[in-house]
Image 1 (tube, one colour):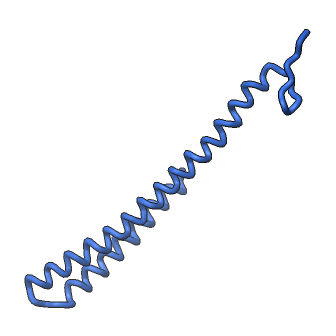
Image 2 (cartoon, rainbow, N blue to C red; image 1 turned 45 degrees about the vertical axis):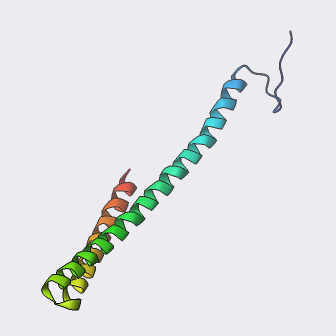
Image 3 (cartoon, one colour; image 1 turned 30 degrees about the vertical axis):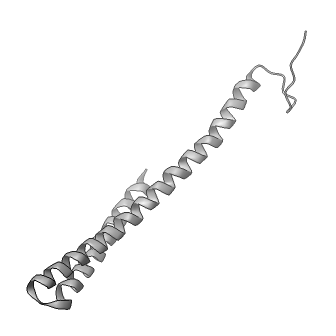
Length: 97
C-alpha cells in the first residue's frame, strides 16, 4: 500500500533504525576525540607537574642548605626521569587495550 521512501531510496522498515545507528556512530567519534584529547592534556599535565615539582623541591632544598645549583639540577634530572617513566607507563597501558 503506501510505502514510505526515505531520501536514500530505502523503503525498508529497518532504514529508520539504521539512520539512528549512523548518527550515534558519528557521535561516538566525537566522544572518542574528546576522550583522546582529555587523555593527552592529562599526560601533558603529568609531565609538567613531575618536572616543575621536582625542580621546585630542589630549589627549596638549595635555599635551605645554601647549595644553589646542586639540588635544583638533581630535582630537574629526577623530575625528567619520573616524567619519562610515567609517560612510558601511561602510553604503554593505552596501547595494550
